[in-house]
Picture (cartoon, rainbow, N blue to C red):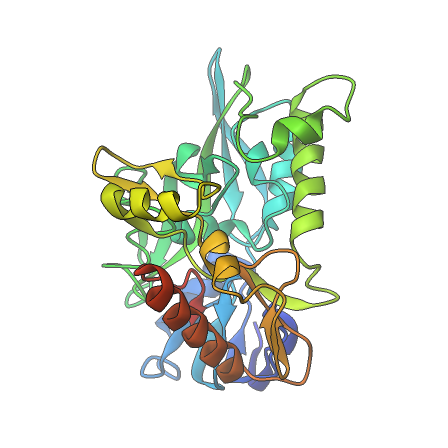
Length: 336
């Protein structure tokens, strides 16, 4: 396996920022990954695990070793009357895996169609969209420990999944590299169509199936989100904030169209996009970066800019939303 020095990451982050890694490696097997981790040459350097680069904001060059696992393969490991279990390599493109599941009429991840990135990042971020999250289908996460190269398997419960969160972003951050994820998918899935504008989009199809649900969600995402090949972004930049119900009621009184999503009896989730739009940021540009004209939750890169510009814009947005609504926005992207 080749370890590259002074390696450009411009094509490996969907913002398209022109940053470089001191060293870069893309192991394609567990053995080569273990060999990389066990060597002494890079042991003392900072390490960064990179998936598809779709949730990364690079604000500077990375003065260490960037590892992008490219372990592929989809293997059926078990099957019952109701479910199938698939062991999927971390380097598999996420939407390719979703397409594979839908083609085989196995449900559970179809609402997560067209999310960029790789399978290995799905448990780290607990990716989610349209009423579904990766944790709904994940049963196990297989890793190699960075310090020893030893294999460790986390059960779904041990992953401590939360909203865009997991143990891999907390206690195990930088300590383990995902090599495979085991998913449980349903042979007779219950389709989730009540989120957002899914039902409206499904009216364009003759019937509602796993395939048409996937196509509807892809169509919705294409309308709302920029194509990274044409306009750099990392998708949703901020998490939807969870606030006390009392505060939400005050905001709804001022803006009756404000949607809320129950969390528990005392807290609800608000749409960050609505807050940002009402604060006047939708479609605004600041030099080489700006806020997407179709989706206020997305910060975009027009080209020739830097991650620091995007970070500065996000800070201004967060400050503006807090001053207007008293709501603190938290970035969803990983800031490097």
